[in-house]
Amino acid sequence: MKISDQLREKIEEQIATGHLPPGSALDEATIAEQHGVSRTPVREALIQLATEGLIEIRPRRGAVVSSIGPGRLMEMFEVMGELEAMCGRLAARRMSEIERAGLLTAHHACEKAREDQDSDAYFYCNERFHAAIYTGSHNAFLGEQALQLHRRLRPYRRLQLRVRNRMGISFKEHESIVQAIISGDASAAGMQLREHVVVQGERFGDLLASLAELQSPAHA
Image (tube, rainbow, N blue to C red; front, side):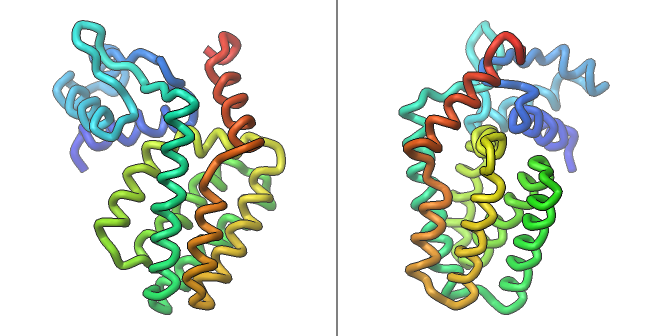
């Protein structure tokens, strides 16, 4: 893996985990010094992150972690729900036995993380769970679009797991999704995934509250 790709993944992870909250400045020289590399791969990594929408590169002001307004965030989750619903419908019809077994493995990993009350582990298991559905759709273009938006929303999806009982609720929703896909019920799979992903009502309020807390001076 190229140095720039390694750096992109490290910075992306810091954004997703909240170590670099929205509005954080990203200085090329500082990052290069921290990782013991030249500024060229750092610049390449920042360009990749900007392409993904995770950061903004502003002329004469450098790079900062992107901040999304509530309305825009709601819109993005709505689109994510539709993309995942499409993936679920196709996966229910097209998944091979091996792919279904992989989905179950990811589901069981989520179960263990939930039992351990390990939100970090659950976050990564959850990513593998959704990735298995994207792959199982057997529509490469759709999978690419879903993955791209999934990555764009990683920081916000992670924040959701900080909400009380969210892991348990998420796992129950996974259970319904798995049952629909395994049984080949495309309609139910699509509906369950849409409801699982779309953030609205109290869930959206909880997400905004978590984001406000993350951006407060106490967490700076």
